Image (cartoon, rainbow, N blue to C red; front, side):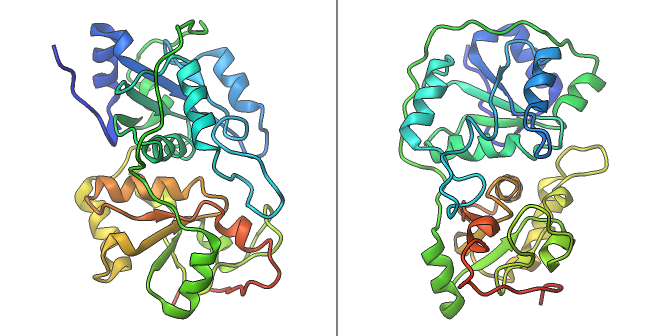
Length: 289
């Protein structure tokens, strides 16, 4: 019997039903993380996690090697990351569900990475671990033992732009940049992570947490479209570039745009951490234009 394919979000009850009916049809990834305590996610996973979930660490698994100039969370090498997922048991075409405990802040990175690897059967657990627990659904401490899968990287379903494209865009204004950081960091205030505060000139600001409703779940497709459309101002989503501090929470905006039916935005993986590492790059501060 064919199963529903989820490509953006899956509700806790739908995931629970799928796990009960066909647990082997789902690959679950726990992406919990804390930027201030990089061991916290793994500790939380060891204490309890969704049944059958594997843990993926933002720094070790969902990011590549840093050079000091390529940002705080550069992309992993595509083939190596695909091999890592296969070693954990991921199969071609298998449904992936990612979750965290922060409204998708970190799980959206895996959602985007899998689309970058050509895999569209990937969804976030809407509301994450808090929603799962609020529904009274079970947790486990067992570490899953699964045979290696056959997952391979395919043609990307998500695209990137590099720093040279952003530099060129300062002259052409062909693309709209949307910065996912909190408004204070966008304005250049309270910067604690990167060399200098501020934002890329002409970038607009849409804080990723504004994609969520009060209950921690994503807002409706209609609401998200109504939020993003004024930022685009009639520009096709294919000409949008999403960025943040290090290319992580920008993926949350990518998911929100996908839910809204605004397909095709690109990611600038290096984001502010790469841009600001080069003293020659111009910096803007203050509120968005």
